Image (cartoon, rainbow, N blue to C red; front, top):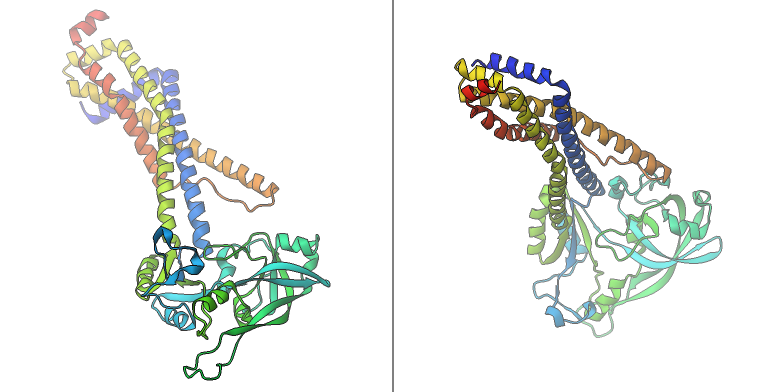
Length: 447
């Protein structure tokens, strides 16, 4: 039997039982719609998470720390751990060397210190954090009141929203006002008499003050990411924070470990590379230099595994609706066999082979899968659009930025269509085999 004749006969049979075949096709469409909606939810959440992390600059960042000898479980608290034999101090020389490494675009320290701020004649204790210029593009300052720093060396400050409320409940009125930062500056002491090595005798702390202008208020805490010692409530440009030379926690650690050192060291450095694909190679080089390293690349592998498992679970649960649709296709085609016994008998009496009869029912099952897949993809896309719109409205009412939690890609569309057709053809296996085995003599006698 020619393919054209086979197709014409299959479509004619489908048109004869329009209501039953339409309901079966609708069942396939509902199954495909649930499949598309659930998988697009998983894809959308994955894209949302990766885009936010990529925008924050964490995917192309490496956090470098000095190595210590952990001595296993009984090694004692961190302050008492001794440096690794192969370790080297994380100081200004190390920072300069790392900056010269290939593919490295930025190296900056994590500067945070607890101090006092005076505003309107009243003292407030807070945590100060230095922010690099690159943090402007991290997304943490989107939607803030005011603006970002005008230059890396500007005497300007951005307040975290909760701290701004402590200063004044009307946070918008703070912008443009001045505050005084009172901090302890680290100053190196001269070499003691009789010291022929030229090493200093440590350092002293001197109280200092500096005036800053408030230029913005931000809701999030952009300074509380990886490698930080605490949440920054008062944010200032990182170059300004470095020139303050404010005493930090690691200064006391340096004295306890080596009182002869006259170079300030960093508790950690953030190293940013050109692309996330260069993180692993740069990590190896930093380890060879004798530093401890950590990057979000290690965490992202676990995150990727989580989303793969989530996609698998969503696929399994959404496939239940397609399983029900499969039973509907089997039921429809089995009923068609009973109603068309005479037609099948005539075809086989006229010389139609068993394979022709099988192909006839396969075409009918495939058409229902194709039409159901097309309708299902459309329904699934519409569900995703409606839920995205509803989510944006809800977040807008909560004064939060809108997000897209559903994402229907062409790959997902093709997968859903192919899956629907394959399931429909699989559902047609039993009816097609049963129709092919039908004895034409018995079929005509039955009529």
